[in-house]
Image (tube, rainbow, N blue to C red):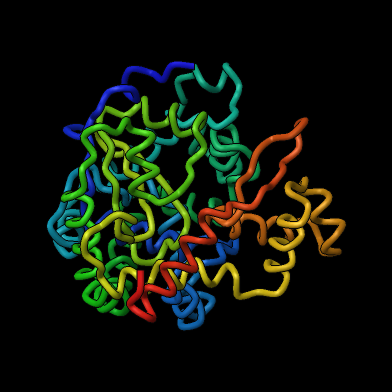
Length: 365
């Protein structure tokens, strides 16, 4: 099947790898705000969860998840401090309304009626129940935390209080924790940006470029559609996201956040980046159950998820987490077989991981 025109043509001029300090920081804060376990993320995320009190962590989730589309900047800033100063000056009603309008434009599995309806904001904001119901209609039940959004509603109907909470929390979190972490990791991130800016991407289409930069075997059908819709794509290396790839939209661009790394064919090596990528990959192997799963699949050639669950003898959620980590780190490849997920061993990724570890420790090719 031919790729869409936006994917077929070399599009270097419409794509770039960039540091984006503010969006980078927000991506790290989002990792901390998520409840679901993401094996392989940076140690900073775990350390922060241990440092924050329960009240601080809830407030963090409230700001980052409850007001995400209010805090996501529409323009670039040279520093997080500049962004905070600008946010503090933003009209609170305009800030709130920008978030609500973004919600109205999102439709995740919603009905055609919801997709085409013009929201009656007076009705939407009439009560916590109508507000949460509006979010469920647009995002789906599974993606809406009712308790958190009910608390968010108290601020949504009071825009000045909402802006004050957002600014106070972000300023506190930046000065207490994230500014030191940014100072530590910024040099490494700049090296990652520089390496990809110097790479030859001219003959790659967008999907090839995304796979090359992220180091992930991104699903062709899904990512072809996502990339084709964007006028331009900005790739942002993050120090904490590990083997995962996430995305967000701003202005006319698609932002793709990936774990900071070097191109596999880079002529120079940066020890800290090499070490970070090796830690991500080896952490997936540093578990007896995950190694058993790899061994079983290697012996069988291919296994369905249900067969793996039965063989391991653990719950479906537990095995799914293991399979997710092994897939995002590239040790397993996933496909659909008669409607079920099936997995095969990615021998090339295993060999490259062992070779990279050998080269890093012993200096040999």
